Amino acid sequence: MSWHWPVRPRRVVVTGMGTVTALGNDVASTWDGLVAGRSGVRTLEAFDPSRITSRIGAEARDFDPSAILDRKEMRRTDRYIQFALWSARQALDNAGLPGRLDGDLAERTGVIFGSGLGGANTLFDNVVLMAERGPDRISPFFIPMGIANVGAGQVAILTGALGPNFATVSACASGGHAIGEAWETIRRGDADIMIAGGAEAGLHEAVVGGFASMKALSTRNDDPVGASRPFDQGRDGFVVGEGGGALILESLEHALGRGAEPLAELVGYGATADASHITLPAPGGIGAVRAVRRALEKAGMGPDEIDHLNAHATSTPEGDKAELAAIRTIFGDHAPNVAVTANKSMLGHTLGAAGAIEAIATIMALRTGIVPPTINLTNPDENGLGLDLTPNIATRRPLRAAVSNSFGFGGQNSAVVFRRWDA
Image (cartoon, rainbow, N blue to C red; front, side, top):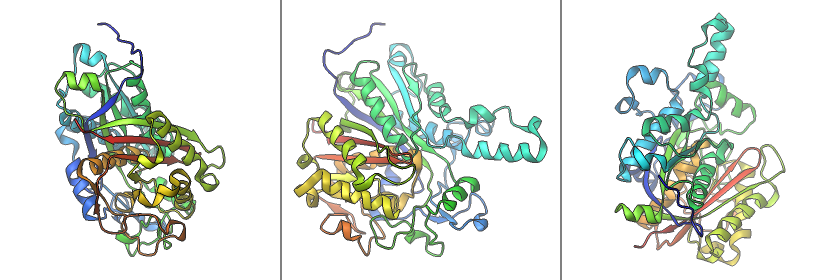
């Protein structure tokens, strides 16, 4: 095979998407749920939540990986990896690519898949097992099921992708960073195709309990559907969700050469650090501002060319406040014209998967001209007054370009810019 180093950065398009969320096991059902304003938040069933102050979550209750894994493989594969494999297989199918790659196609395809926690269920369950019965009872699959990079490795094993392969671990920005770094990989010529995304399965008593001890979670246990309230004055914390999302990114030349129809073009990516606080955003959301500005600079676009923003918007008091301030700073006089949505009002916060799932929702908005609602927004934060936060009901409008934000604990920020594909 020969390597083709580009004289200038290559254009990159999205040719396939796949997801699993609390709203459904594919892109169509998840999108339909978002547009309808349907919440996936319920009282937790993954474990008995009675010992925790927050007893709600957004579970992927109907998820069944048996279509891609047999019983033995399922026992040896953490749930977050199952989400990654499921989403990746969907995305390949959607892109018109074979489920198993070979030859030059395999050599020129890579995987970057993020997860904030990795195999949390495997890790905590085996620690408890060790404490109760001793270290000789630890599963021999404890490490390969538990570490955060194996999701990316398992996607390559499933698909045969032989190109660049690693995981991004930046808490809630992991999925966004995976997409952005995959974009850069193709732009510089190190791959023609990248399978990029994020997966998270953090609905374990220890994880939810840990967030609850930080006072980060909503305790609106008697009203699960109304618990996640981004930008609303009544918000009291986020709701933990689970799921996965995968995008097929491809050089424009390669996609058109094989007759694939692009779903959207990825045109910009920015990554920054707050260098401020381990959990709180930098004052005024300045880290987010810098990430979006860098993404727009790479895209060669101005703020006034953005029609839509998929906000990180977790429903925490300080996080939402900082993002609203960032929106005003980034877009200035154009800010009221940007249609903002907060998918976490329905999906919960899927942590390391959020950036990928929300990127898919952003692309669907560009393709359909529909902006999903921010549900439970009945009393907007005063910092959001005058902004179009799409309260409670989806809207239709022409959309040319959009930004998707993802921010993680530790002050790690990512922003990606998509443009509607008009062949």
